[in-house]
Image 1 (tube, rainbow, N blue to C red):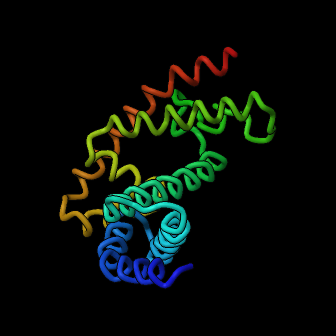
Image 2: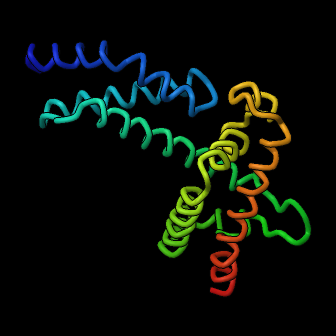
Length: 182
């Protein structure tokens, strides 16, 4: 690595480090997770900056951080999928949606379809509903913790999560029915 490249990396870390860490911390449960994601961002930055110049460094860094956060949420979602069950008799369990134990090309394809649909459905939610759902379901924060973070009433947060869950169930029910018929 040339001294110029090394100097550029150091200057970028000084310029964006604190803001990037704050951005990540506000979207993950623990400081340790935030620091791990930040380390991944810096690693990816150092690898890319050696290969090609980045025109809008700040925008690139925050986009990479957002993608790493989504990857982290996805990994936690997959772990929850293994453990999840139906909430009541009328609902389906996510673990029934896909055959978790087998790893065939068909099941990998079905998993890919499921995760694409799941994250597309998440993106359709209003930001407040999506964020409460992610904090509660994927990060494991309590409603009291979320209320402290946002300044919102607990009842409001519970309502937002409920609407998010209803939307996700509605969107994924069709996929569920198609996969079970398949």
